[in-house]
Length: 191
Image 1: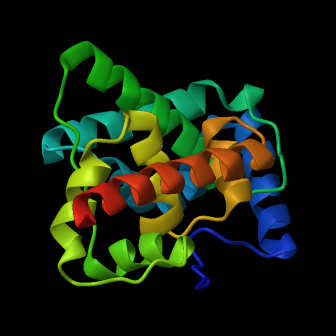
Image 2: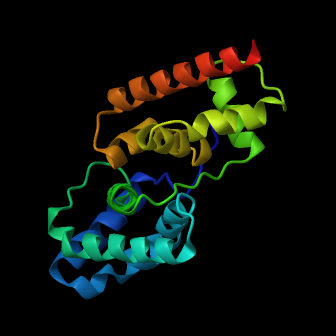
């Protein structure tokens, strides 16, 4: 797994971020560094899953508004503050999809799809690409979100668990089941 500095922080970085959060809890104007640091990441996360840039801007704005108004409820759990923001973003998008029946978008490249095959030690062939894309689109919104976070965004299970508000073991089990489902579907198509 490749190291992605956007999703991983050293203990020192986590502690520095925590002091900014604590300061922002007492003075909302001190929230600006968190907004500046994470706005682009959260926007990209939302936009990859939406079919409209305007909707992505709206949802991202809502995420930061909710984060600021609920900052007193934030509890440090050993992962970057971004995990909490991603959880808010995930919930906002799921609510929007339920309310408006918006079409969910998926963005992946060949390398991302190759990782899915490698996870289950399956050989990868270029002709699998359209099949895998179609199988991914048939997943439930929750399963699709797990696949995106694990394979497209290269998030560790600990962070996925934090975003989805589940245990790390549960995140691993769910991912294993999703991969098994994709593997079975791929075998049916190959036959």
